[in-house]
Image (cartoon, rainbow, N blue to C red):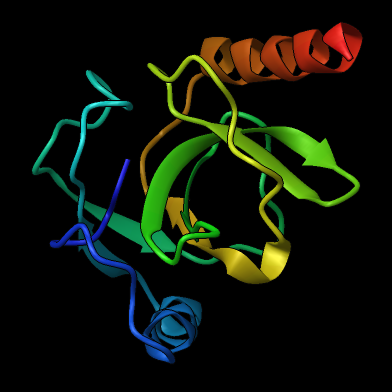
Length: 128
């Protein structure tokens, strides 16, 4: 799910500036796409805050390899970075380096969502 008003990648330096702002306080981004629906709807504005630690089930905003800002759920960790996936996406994203994480969407995440994230990453590990 893209969390940027346009489908274009962020320009050089923009992500770093957003990450610096998120470390100071919440930043707001407009979400585009439906892969996190109904939790987050297309066009919804969400607040993103940086955290020291991210837990399975958290919804993260991060810069993907193609330069776009994405909002997907954290499933767990892998040697190359964090493992994320949109709630309605069939495949997980490639490993997301910690330096590419903007922050966590400021919404309460329930125990069931956290447990489902852990089970999903276990399925990925066992499948390999």
